[in-house]
Each structure stands twice: as C-alpha cells, then as structure tokens.
Length: 148
View 1: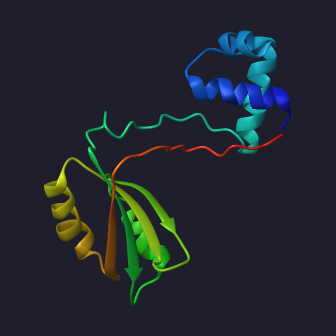
View 2 (view 1 turned 45 degrees about the vertical axis):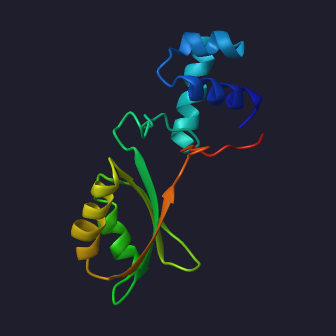
C-alpha cells in the first residue's frame, strides 16, 4: 500500500458511493488507475466499502457495552449465537474480566431491560452480564487505519 492507495481510501471514507472519476479528481490520478487500485485493495482484503449505520438514525438512542461471562459452553459458540441478534451491533471475544463483549443498541431503557432479560438471559451458557451504559460516543469507526 502506497501514498496513492492511502489517499484513495481517505477519499472513499468521505463518501464510499462516489465514482472512480470523482475519487481520481480528488487524489490527482486517472479514473482507470483508481478503479484498478480499488480492485487490488479489495482483492487483497485491505479495503471493503460498506455502509455504516448511524446509531441514532437507526433508532438506537441507548448504547450498552455488555461483558458476558460464559459457563459450561465455549465462548465461541455463545459469541456466534449472540451475533445473530439484530440489536447486537458488535460481538468480540476478549481476554480479561469477561469472555465476550457485546455492543447493544436499544430504543430506550425498557427495550434494554426486555432484551437483556428475555433474549440474552435465555441463551445457554451465559453466566453473568456486566452492563455499562454509553453516555456519549466520541468515536466509532469500523475500519482500520494503516500507516504507509
């Protein structure tokens, strides 16, 4: 990955739907080169252009980080089951005080309570939940920044 690739990625972060010509104009290259670079970056796994949900626009006014302790089942199996829920925005196997960390989006506190008790609480293998309310999100990025 070189400086041109970095500029292309930076431009796509602004608007992933823009044309190759628009990106080319912004980075000082040709549309043919930009299309070729984007394809190479995608083929190598370095770039994936995706839609990212705005939590508030999706109706999630409450975000909750939840630590999950797993008992009598593998953490991987529980994580795979958790990943099937639409309200769970992220599922991570972690090291530390808990086995899994999830990010839950909810419409309000009643939705949080119902979801944790009626949905998550019924999953076999979940021992204890440790929830923390996100008061304000200062940064959320789904992509990795790579230095060149």
